[in-house]
Amino acid sequence: MKVCFHRWMLMGLSLLMSACQTSTPYPMSDHYDGKHFHNQPVEPAMQSAWKIWWYFLTTTRVHTVPEQPLPVKTLSWADWESLSNSEVHVVRLGHSSLLLKLHGQQWLIDPVFGERASPVTFAGPKRFHPLPIDVDSMPPMDGVLLSHDHYDHLDAHTIERIHHKVKHFVTTLGVGERLKGFGVPAEKITELDWQQSTERGGVQITALPAQHFSGRGLFDRNTTLWASWAIQSHSAQQSTKLYFSADSGYFDGFKKIGTQHGPFDLALIEAGAWDKMWEGIHMTPEQSVQAHIDLQAKVMMPVHNSTFDLALHPWYEPMERVLAASLAKQVNLATPMMGEIYTVGQPPSNDPWWRKHLP
Image (cartoon, rainbow, N blue to C red):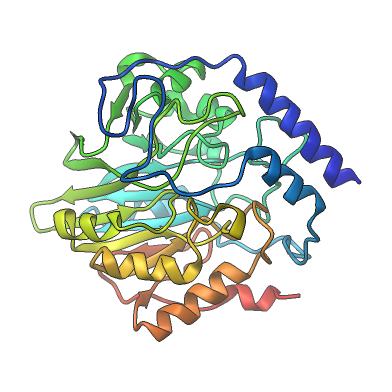
């Protein structure tokens, strides 16, 4: 009953919070009608929010949360800053939160450092593991990339906590208004539409289509844009290209992105939180591996798993299935622990670390 109460309470809070949101008009496009953003070419089929809430409340949940906190590899900032500036280094911090060193430029992607992916601190999905970094001693960041405005990707308390250490924020249309509400100065924010790019310190970031949706409540749906991202980092010796899927269902856009912007040295692809009730907006692990192939990427790192209880599948199923699918498709898979450094271009480790903690 406690879980059900928390979910009903969160739904009510979302309703109240969404009533305070406003939309900002942007130029008309094939994916913006003046009020709402849309997927292309068509919207994926999806159940109503009320049906999904009822489904969550009435469906039996088995092993969706690990019995014990999952281990992490603690990353010291001294070790991080000592890494070579001639390479690209990536660290999973949890869920889809990532720490990148892009030829010396330090970036965060979708940082969520709170205990819960929720509009409140006392209820909602709670993290399975501690953070592998000390946020208070975090060095200055050159940038933060924010893919969309859902609570498991955009955490108000995290932004309020770190924005004074961040030179610039890059995000999608509409999300900048939310950042301003969290205390980020307007001059530190760049908003991008699909197919638009910005470059900062030798790092080029391009917003690309994804098949998803946006909103932080029930009444502000699709008033801000969502995106996947191409990240290209340059040094005197090399150029490295990364792809971050953020949240997306499987769609033909991956092939187009691979043709137009690939190949990629590393694809950071969501593998987690799928369900038959919302199959158009989150991929199964097998679809995630196919997306990697479509993108023409050399190495795949699955994200969006192993941190929060956001769906009804067992917590370990994303990593188990993506590992099996990658072996079947002969895909190079990187499965670092949270806090473990992966250097792009090095042979990836696909150690199944999570198996030590299976029920």
